[in-house]
Image 1 (cartoon, helix red, strand yellow):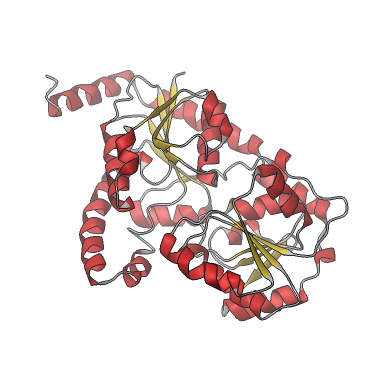
Image 2 (cartoon, one colour):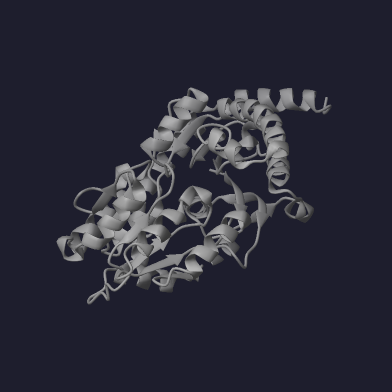
Length: 383
């Protein structure tokens, strides 16, 4: 079986990139992506046959325009020689514009177009609001069209599944993303002299909640790990970190350092807005470390009373209270790891992905593929 994996961009080491690589590895797939930076993403990407968009695309500014052009590049791809195409990300599913047999692993519908539209709107000035209204209105129509064209939508959590139903009126299949639990191990004698925060740094992660909570609990220490993704947000957050003596920012770290940080923390803290799923809590549990998370989104599916603590608004007060009273000894590292491996380990993910791939190949007939090819050739002037 010939398979292609089409993913937004490979310019970092986030969960979405990890999932795309896991699918490609399981299916021995070729990879198509709008942008690739081998120095910043996972080294194993070099093992695959990678096709990327023209380099000029990565230089386009502003980012919104670059993403729009990336989506159009995905839409222009002719991949009908592949038996099955897996799209991964927020724009890559535009490959379904005229390709058949597309399965979309959806980490979330574009939230700026749907559930976070009002939140994004409020952050913009008058001119920005006008541009956003025009872009979001047009792009939502296109987004819904290509989502309808996919053979199947697979989501990373029940939470994301609800968003897909709301946005596209499609019933998705839930396949939790794989966590490479072999990278994480509980520490034999954990230091437990700090709390840990891991995430890409953008407004939706709400780091200001964590910083303010720890300002109120000066006897405890917080370490923040992650790469800034939003310059304006980082410009606001960095001064808060600098003036909070018990909060330390390490930036992005390598896998070995991250595993050590996980294993030696008192707890891992997450405050993201309605997180799609959230790999960080599972990585923490695989390291034998409990989690303190806001009671929203995917955290509701992964954080149990036996694996951590959920907090509720008002979040700053609740987090400060949870940190002040947290007892690491109440959690068994062995049971935390067993839970992570059993429910979120890679074996279940691989079985599901391979099964879905075989099903799509069988359902999408050669006659239908040929019809789509003829129709597209006619529209594009090929006949």
